Length: 212
Image 1 (cartoon, rainbow, N blue to C red):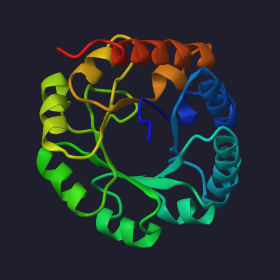
Image 2: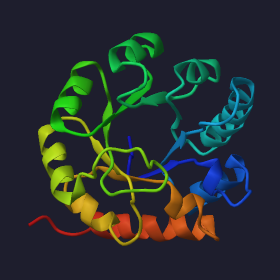
Image 3: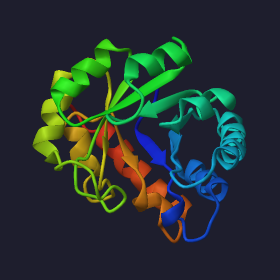
């Protein structure tokens, strides 16, 4: 599984463009995984949008994950679901989605990460690394040191989320992240494809650095 450039949708940042437009451009730019996050639409609308996105992602062999809503993920046959600390417990989500689908869990510290691992998570979303306007009610940011400590405490991949952009992507990878989850730096960009491409370039350059 390639978590390196993990796109998270956000309709409020998309400049009036549809989720489908944003995701299609981001995939062209190099996004490796897509999470559909929609907090304001009703269930019918979410299913309609998720079906469109799932079809697009499958066309490009990109995993498609639904945020929070296990029912929507199952309804559209998504590749997985991502839950936070205030969402459905990870163990319950795993039971519902079965062993084959991807389960991501947000964690603010190693205790939460260890519990998520024990309950069947495939990856951890280290959240938030930096303060971000997309989640104003988020806990205090981890910073790079907190990200590094959390990554070292986990035996499953850790994805950095929260304020991730071109200025800090490489540093996050150097501190143990398997990838960066990006919202505004791609979704709010004037040129979505170019923004994703530039981030992917940074990621690939960092991956080519020799181990020290």
